[in-house]
Image 1 (tube, one colour):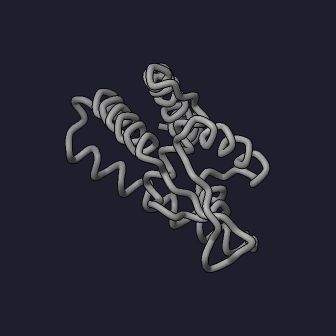
Image 2 (cartoon, rainbow, N blue to C red):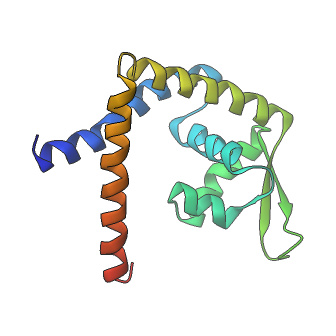
Length: 147
């Protein structure tokens, strides 16, 4: 296996998985962008700051603001004043948002299970070691470049 093959497939797998997931979450009335945003909101927990969500999604705040507007208009999310920093906002899933998050989260888990069906536990362990080493090496590179 070549390094090129590894990187091509490491990037291709999540893209193709996302396409399958997108097709399934459309039935919930979500787009790729809104489902990802709800997913991270649900994972990060109630009261997450807008800036922290933007960082997790790797989005600029103006791009995230438009997504949050749509989610708020749809009744999925509420923005509230940040009690620790009055200039900022915290985000809270509504009851509707939590219900959709759980449905979407279940769909994502199902797709992941389907994709990885038949992969042996020892293969997961080997894959984990490869990614752990690659991330450790990447962090060394980033530290050396001031990233």
